[in-house]
Amino acid sequence: MRTGALHSGTGPKPKARALAERLRDRTEEYQRYMVDFSVPFDNNQAERDLRMVKAQQKISGSWRTLTGARRFARIRSYISTVRKHGIKPLTALRELFAGRPWMLPATS
Image (tube, rainbow, N blue to C red; front, top):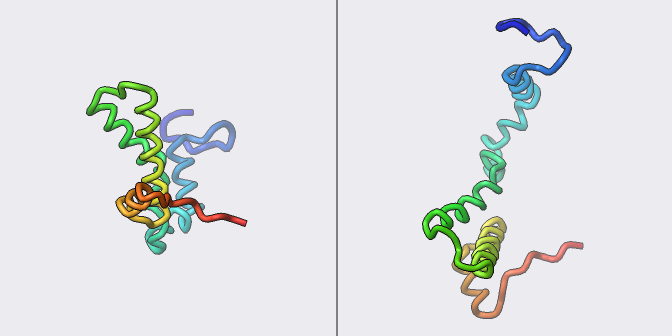
């Protein structure tokens, strides 16, 4: 396809055109975070969860043992989960060390 040509309807669309059509067709979904503040600006929670792990690796070089890495991951996972449920991490850790760990609510 030559530069500047309109999409003929056959073959894959140029990436810019596909993005423009998605934004046009799903405007309400893309702008939901502007009116519903419980919706995050992006859906990049997985990347945010990994950021601390990468920072820890960068600072210390790595973990000395696989057991240490697993412990770090378990603690970070616990903190991330309680935050997502509106619980302050320090409160959750105090309760954990007092023998009252926070657990996901039972679903029926």
